[in-house]
Amino acid sequence: MLHSCTLTILWLLVLVPSFLAQDPVVTPNPNYVAILNDSLWFYEAQRSGALNVNGYQSRVPWRHDSGLGDGKDVGVDLTGGYYDAGDYLKFLLPMAYSLTISSWGAIEFWPGYKLASQDNYLRDMLKWGTDWIIKAHTDASVLYVQVGKGNVDNNYWGPDTGIPTPRPSYKIDVDHPGTDVASEAAASLAASSIVFRNNLGDAAYADTLIKHARDLYNFADTARKTEYQKSVTDAKEFYASTGYGDELVWGALWLYRATNDTQYLNTALKYFDQYNLAGKTAPMDWNEKTPGIYVLASEILTDSNAQRFQKEAEAWLEGVVSGTKDGTFTRGGMIWFPGTSEMASTVPANTCSFLASIYSYSVLSKSTTDDSNAKRAKYEAFMQTQLDYLLGKNPQFTPYVVGVHPNSPQNPHHAGAHGGTDVGNLNSPPQNQHVLYGAMVGGPNKDDEFYDERSDWQQSEVALDYNAPFQGLMARQVMFATSDPPYTTLPYMPRPTRPNKSKTALIIGLTITAVIVVVCAIAIYLLRHRISSWWKSRRSIKNETSA
Image 1 (cartoon, one colour):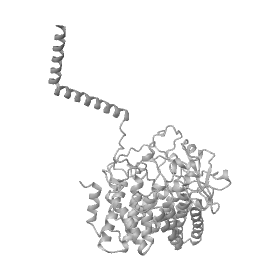
Image 2: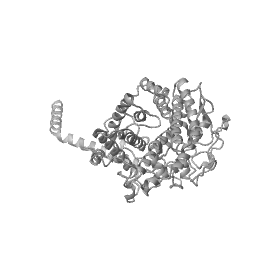
Image 3: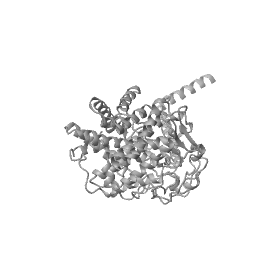
Image 4: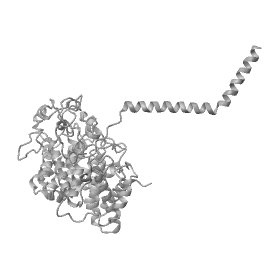
């Protein structure tokens, strides 16, 4: 039986070639414009440091200057940057990844930002992060990668005016290296430099970014290679990397794209083979860059190298859209990767859609063959089904973006937006005091269920990396969407309540008991003749003995 998502994709394929993205629209859809604006607003809500300085003007009225002492413990100015999620920790690995992906989305879908008049907000969003990385890169082989202690921060639930101190600063250096995070930082600066040079007309700042990117990558490449949490053990519980080979290739490819320096291409190809990165099937996220490597290399390389990576990209994409490799689909049609999606199901849906869209738009569009057009239609149909799901076309009638509809999540796991002060009772007050516009939450479980509980961080937490690919997809929709997102026609639906676990356990226990009783009764009935004969035999023996 064909899955509903597969049927939807097949139906959309009938629309070839009209379904394929062609020229940008003249007048963008206002709903997608609003979501793109809201996503950038969300990043403003995550800012650390002094908010209204150097020409910046915060649009988030309930945020305050915070973290103004960051770095004082080591004599370095580490103010600024972004808080990672619903807390007040700064982790460079997911922050840098978010900047890389946001920059990639801008490179591919820049007209969307211009059509939506969001180009200046994007500039500020990127620069707020890249300026912090420059601050954190205090020497060619020194990089600060975390501010704040995890178990201290996680025991605080309250506004940004009471963040607990001290906030220790953690670094990597030659003696305590971190190949993965240094490579990702290099990738983020290289990718951002392309936006600043080619789209924002700021060549001087782009040059600064490239200088730091080169130094960071050289540090990653020449220092002893290891995962950064072995040097910064406090990060292990929160963002432990599972390897660094993908980041080495990823960083080199972005530097090659930004500089056209073939040494980085040669390095990328060398490490791709050395770390056996071909044939992977996992989704992309802050920890796993390999699918992104396939698509990025397909886009920027030529000749046999391009063909090699196109085969890798298409093998990965075919497995994704068909649900035949690591991923499958929920009954409602959301892509699901067991072992990954449980932590935040919207993330694979977003990253897979993001890569499918870029591959279709920037790689397959270069060919006009029937085969290329069919693949484009398939990948864009997959992307559209996932976006539709995320924006309300799902069994819960829930757009998983805060603030776009009454059915949107009302209780994201975010201390500042909540307004509470009791870490032991996240339901006090029961409703968030502030709306965290534009934030993508973790999303539903494998049964398409979402309960909007603040304490359920897997479903309700927000994070920098959740929004990064989604933001690029919204820029794409601004360019090409000719119809409204699904949530515009949704009726209001009250949020379902989670089944009572104790009541459920009682019901299960009673059911099992009843089944056992019935089975025993049936067994006795079927064996009644044997039991009767046995009993008569026992009585006969007893009588003979008595005589």
